[in-house]
Image (cartoon, rainbow, N blue to C red; front, side, top):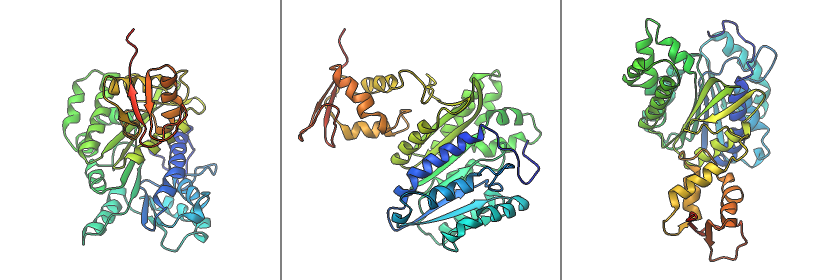
Length: 367
């Protein structure tokens, strides 16, 4: 149930979302703000900005990532933070919590909106649509209590613009439990943006039903306009807590989010797993990179030479659970040492170096 007080106890598993957010912001901010342009950070369910014992909430994490970034003085663009919180007591508390950051930011850099997410998000979208304006690169965090108030229709409007990204946390238990409520049909119609979730009612309770609903949500994000969709499950020991979905228009954003996920996991009793068939556990598998080696061999074996640039784009995409930091030393070099990979470059190179334009030939051993 949603908390009824202004602040509430921070749950350990919430740290997972916050750690990923901070890691992503640390990489996202300098990339987005290296040019003189406007960027939006929108927290759709901002809360009071802190928890009962003073721990930072997501608005403070975002502001701290920006104002205390090592590249802060070199960022030439302008970022506007929009914190949306429908509960008036929490919105007022948030104003007090973020007050210290106002000294480093311009007067219009932070907007706290005491309104529902959908209402404020539609207002922002309408501002750019009428008259037509260029929608700036935007990161939209959507972290509601339950399954209400985060309709796919609004996400579709967000993803209609290039360089927009949504970061959604989804709890299957809410979906499963909510389908028994009197108004569940309307709420789940809004959540998925389609009626197809009803097909899941015929599936027996368990992993198969959960997989159906999560695959459907991913498909709906793609149909809503996302070029790339990532999803990772957070487990406490072996109990699923929630799943993070990340939908982006940018190949580079996809790569950076995967890197943020790998940096986060594991922590305490919690671990992130990919939602692929093999359920790769990020950060603790003894042979973490064997699945990436296999994926590259399956894709490129018996093909002509391919460039390192093409291979990097494949690894950056949502077709793998890995990021490009895993590619060269941890994957290509072992393949080259095993004579499974040949590399050729016009520029002088040492084994393990793959400068731009390097040509690669993958050859599985015949035995």
